[in-house]
Picture 1 (cartoon, rainbow, N blue to C red):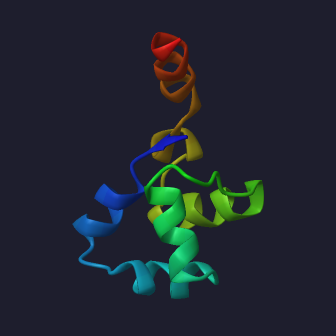
Picture 2 (cartoon, rainbow, N blue to C red):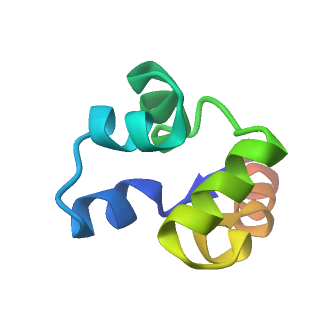
Length: 73
């Protein structure tokens, strides 16, 4: 799923490990989400929303991901 996690993390000068610690997950989980290889669970998405003080929709864009997949055919 398309997301802005890498940008939001970089704006705060956090490493993947920093963000992982704040969210209670592994650094590998953060890497997988940022590289769009893994979609976070709903509870994790809510944690991210709270941490970044923005709606989930401002972090993740499932419509954009679906559009790109359909364009690739």
